[in-house]
Image (cartoon, rainbow, N blue to C red):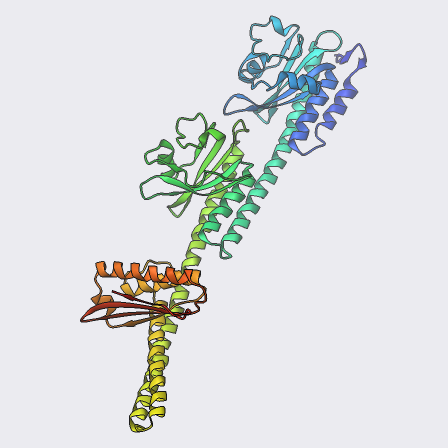
Length: 508
């Protein structure tokens, strides 16, 4: 049986078909491939206008529309392109079957044409399948010569079949590249966190890297609050994060229940989703909220919102971002453990230094002081020598007090609030040192930690704070001595500086 020749008034189109089939598979970049397909189909069939709509299988609507034949002016008049929920575009989305119409305006399904859209009558549409799944639809309108024929439909179906193969290859290539970027990003985050970044910088690193990889408008990290909610503690945006940091999700929120349970939350439109309750939701559209958890421990949440009207996240986006969140959570746990080990090593080293100071330096200084005191008594008679030895004994006694204070300071965890009165005094003077430019000298006499009551301690610390602030306001001061004495007659504070003239503050 003789096969009918595919031809039109311009001659056989089989060579054109072969050329179109070969050309659609020459590019591995997905968006370039899609645009090339619609351009080739429009030229092959001889249509004035063409479009390729990408179908979202989850939402059953068009997420992107690639067009051919429309001028820039016509695009501006149309405005926002249809989403495929209504009209003939929607009909092919809901029922992906080939469709040919001589006059689409007479079809009852034709509706929702945007104002300013070019006038169209003849219509031809076919689905594009990648493997067994519908990827999108090819739409052609307004044949330049006559009406669309069955031969046109047959040619377009052949081209759509080959286009499905090309799209599958391009999509696989793009997914592979996208996966590589996420893997590289996760590795970069892990490296950055394990090289000693602070807790705040670590969270910002995770937020910023995830925002870039997801092409999101913002990347934020939330952590649980004592009240049972969640609060944004780190935010990365293209511009100033503004009021994002500090924004909290109230306890009991449906989103919060899922996140605390370790479940991701995917939002189509943050501004309209009733589950979103924060005041910043109005500026965002599609969003992913991914729990940062490792070994059953919830560290926080990574949120990646896109701008209002931005493209929704695909299934591949969600999978890769979830894997990144798991890797980032593990890196945060490892970085935190590493930081704890370093702090422990510092504490152990400080304890060793304190023991060495106590066991060696203080004992030797004390023995030297006793020797000088004994010498002074034996050499009594020379007032000048006696005075020199007395000053030497006083200096040694002062040095011993300084070393003992240093030992006590070394034994205090620097990041923790001191619980003893002695530690609180040292914390006040250490804080003042940052403003003064030097460390005040502190001496303790007596059992200050056991004899000073809480009420008295508060008043004394207030007096100390005031004396240090007053010294900061004066010029020319290079040294301050703080003495705290506790005994049977109570506790006393003495603050002296080397100003001109020197100032002494006594309390009470």
